[in-house]
Length: 300
Image (tube, rainbow, N blue to C red):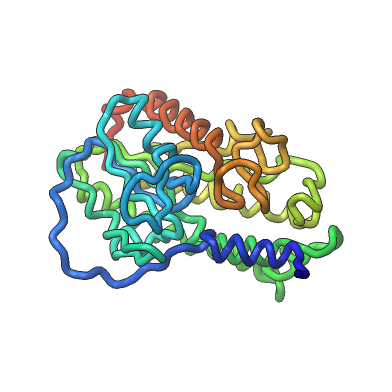
């Protein structure tokens, strides 16, 4: 059987990198929201394969070892984790169909008794899976990824990040409306890319020039998330800074994010168990650093 790194990638993508899509919500009676802490988000929140499954639907690949579970344990609070792999911001308001079950609208978990909400969203809104497919290169030369997304003199990825701003503002308004007594935290994305240098081709086949471009995109995305948090009465959780030196080019045991072929249980280009633990520490630290501490952070 003949194979290539592209066939390996296609297999991983089919296995779960893009595992769910938004679908119209179906009429159903939801249980009354009761958890003090509600976690909303995508696969970087759900941390697929890093621990035992955290409940239905199985297709969300939500792990009991994801950062929401670890944060809830450290804070001693009850948790409703509705994060789901493949989620975009649209899945907050509408049901999300997966290959194995449907995740109800994530907003449905919020209520008057909610005291903490974490939000991890944006990567799929700007096309995470498309970026991965486009930026793996058969040769370590040139900048095929940058050339594709900046053809014609327009940087499409930066445009997508800019377009995400109003969506994030709307998300924060709705979260505050549904959970008016909650502290809300927007969780940024970790440094999955090496902070400098040429990367680790061919282990992760991204051309060095494209690494530089993608670092800029990730910085811009996190900047947009931070700005939305600041303007929307939320705490911003910087996970990029503490994860520097734990990128996918590092040795097993050091890396927080896996590469194209994971060497620890995780989806490709997603946090492993060490990454989930690192993200949880960043969330707890950001909450503690709020002006009045976790429960005292004011909302609009």
